[in-house]
Image (cartoon, rainbow, N blue to C red):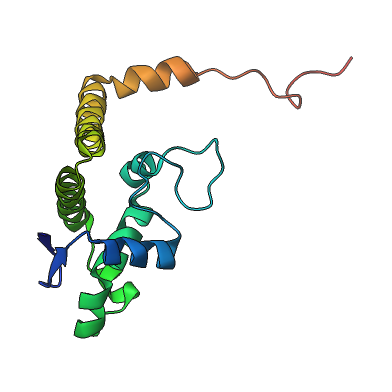
Length: 166
């Protein structure tokens, strides 16, 4: 079981059990035990669930809420109240707790392949973010704008009103 704290100071415990996986499937039509398949009713061309969880923050937060729903119900916290307490830092903490819980679950289940896939997904996200930040740090925005729009022009062509008619 992994925990995270929301911006309202509430501590949430993520525990992936078969009951919790069934609850996520029932509420969201997302099967957490099939990370390598498309999420929900998605078509065959859609990315695997593990990829969607890493790129779709709303889906990730919905899955996390479904996992902690019994705690939320006991505390009288609605889905909207839960979401309102999820700023960027909290989402990152919740994502980390969720991934760690997935890894633990699949390792204990004897599915080292899926545990490694979750770890690889988390590392890939971290590396992609770092690479993008590095590129943005090196980007010369002024040069990019000039190459896209060209140099600003101080002279404009004469208007038709100032051109004598023949």
